[in-house]
Image (cartoon, rainbow, N blue to C red; front, side, top):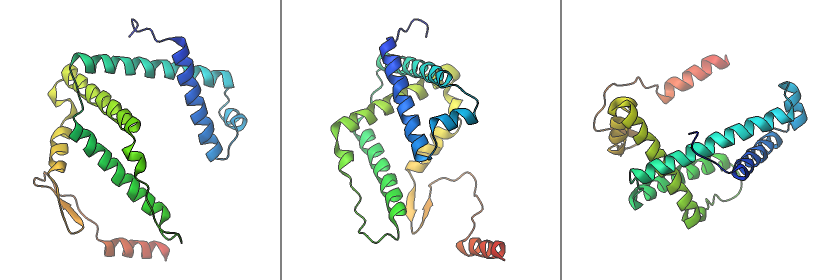
Length: 192
């Protein structure tokens, strides 16, 4: 990666984005930067150096994956994108419903963000880099690098829903299931 030249301005910008995100996390945790640094015996300059290093590596990796994807003609088909967005939407809606369960206001999950073409393009770019990364690793380390992950992914896509259970067309091993009644019994015993 030493031949890849990332403009310093891009590295600084990315590092600033990381610092701002970190500050938001600290704010959410109700912790000051000073307290965080004191707890870890760090100086703010050391933290900034780490963000600059991480930003440079992330940008280099981004460039490598984009070049690889271009050279290998890796594309994300419209149906792949639609499927990914639907999965993201379902997960977000389930989280929304969970977070708002029991609140005394109507649950109105807003799906409009998922229709934004700019956001969809970002997801497509991310998916393309992910696909490039997986293909690169398989090319370097062999088709079996991910083990049975590929087969398991294909099996889960063939899954059919029956009642509240999801059954796959092919199961390698059965995992013991804990019934709801057994879970309640354990909870009651712990409470005593």
